[in-house]
Amino acid sequence: MKHLLVCFISLFILFSCQEQKVSVSKLNESFGARNEVAIVIEDSLWNNWVGDSIRKFIVRQADNRLVNEPMFDIVQYSPKIFSAKAKLSRNILAISIDEKNTFSWQKSVYASPQNVFYVNATDSKEIVTNVKKYADSIVNNIRLAELNEEQHYINRIPTHSDSLFKALIGSTIQIPLYYQLAMYTEEPFLWYQKALPSGDVNLTFYEFPIEYIERKGGTVIEHILQAKDSVAKNYIKGAKSFSYLMIDSSFTPMIEKRDYQNIPYYHIQGKWKMMNDFVYGPYILYVFKDDYYKRYLFVEGFINDTNKPKRDHLMELEAIMQSINFYEDNL
Image 1 (cartoon, rainbow, N blue to C red):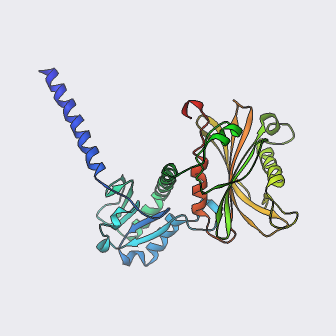
Image 2: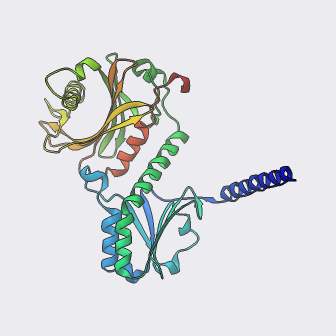
Image 3: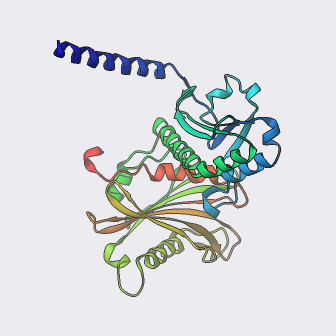
């Protein structure tokens, strides 16, 4: 009897899980422009100091000073006009006055994939308090979801063959075909470029021996930045005579030490400028310490499109850069 009871419970759990999976699979696909958030809130709250505070905490400035753009684009809906189509938005923040102060986060409520954040509060002041309290969680989860969506998009589109990259770099990566191979050398140095109406988006790959980066007479970070500048001076020239790309020393780079596929790397964000010219822009640099090949591998993305939006291009670059695969077993 006990055995039959256990079997019954197991079957019940199994069928319950299957039923849940079926219901999720019936959800429509979510939609929305990249880095777009639908905020559901009464117009009377949105159009006063409450809305100003929400925009301050949620929209913010993208990439922590790297570009002067909002982190997200906002579409606001009154609860009365929050239609079935609007409910398919990929990121939703629903804010309302209620009897209690609560916060919750649910995934794939009306569509998939989807983030839905609920902020309830007893009055206007508590709305702002709650939004401020949970803003980091909301922002970070939306950014991760958008980066993940960008990676899924790149997985679905045609990309360059891995043969050249694997031969020169010893790994694979997913680079969309709309990035053209601009230059490569046996050193190695690889440069891919996507054309824009008034500029370009760039990916470069190069390496230095471990002993060069870890030499005496300075820190690892100092030597990394010196190495980056030396490669740019040799290969990345400007339109004017004697112009070349270099680090903008007036901007303090943002540096984090992270781990990827069990390989430590430096995540560096900063700004570049063109020597002897007036062109400038942001860059993202991953520098992996690769003990297998006894090297520091530089994976760099930078944008040359002065005075134009760059936020979404930066996300695309990170999605491509994070598709690098170092392990033969997975190639």
